Length: 407
Image (cartoon, rainbow, N blue to C red):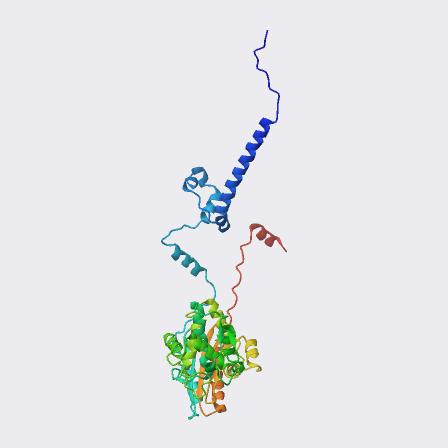
């Protein structure tokens, strides 16, 4: 008799190996899928901006889950038609700090305007021009502020503005080399005139030396790079600087280049309030203006008007909480100084003074200092308000009980 039961094959490693191979392939496939999903979702996870499909979020058994509610609350609603406006609204609502101010004269400080007029009245042979504007509230004072006057080196401030506009537009690089030619060599202040013709100076050095030591050759290099006298004058007109005009290369000892106290103040204010130049170029403007070494006119006069301890103007003003970014001018027959004034309470003002008179007459510089000193009472910092008292939390019943039982 023979058995009908099938014979068993001897066991081997075939089936376990095939099973392991299948598991490995399955694991690799899941890993690839998971990795791809994480790569797509990683930015959304980081920003907490995950949008789940509606067929998931609408499930009744999921609707009340706390984790889903929190996820919905952090997921912004997106609408292609209003995305830009909503982003703008969010940015504006999150802004902090003091407003930048405006170059908008509103209320004249008549006492200061009258004071300036009285200070200049005794000098029939001097022509004076003065202007001051508080950018935060529009209070201002003026004395023939729009009269064209010999600019001397004070015109270098609007020249710096025009050059930095080219950087903003991408037409000039901060490290672009400028070549010294015979036509652009300017005597007087500065050291670049002593270098051989054909010398190359990076724009950042040219701009800095123009303000730092009032280098005349550096100024001519920048005027030429902007496009020459006609082009830069057209730019001044477009910037609403009607009295500012370059007629000759510097040093212009005859005083044919002109500006006004109002124009100088506006050229500085436009940068500070963000009307002109982007943030990076605005930083460059301020950094360059901070290098000016001459502080014997506007800064010294303001320090005298503030009273108290005197000394080196910049250092002494800093101890009082003030900072002045200024640029002077001096061609003997005309003197000027204009700058941005930071007050201890965070407010800012612009001011400019020009005086024309006999050659090297000390009355001209003394008058500028006297007019700057007269500003001081109107540039006093506002007292800091008292800090609000912290809100005390209501005591718990346990704390109340402890307070009543304590001896």
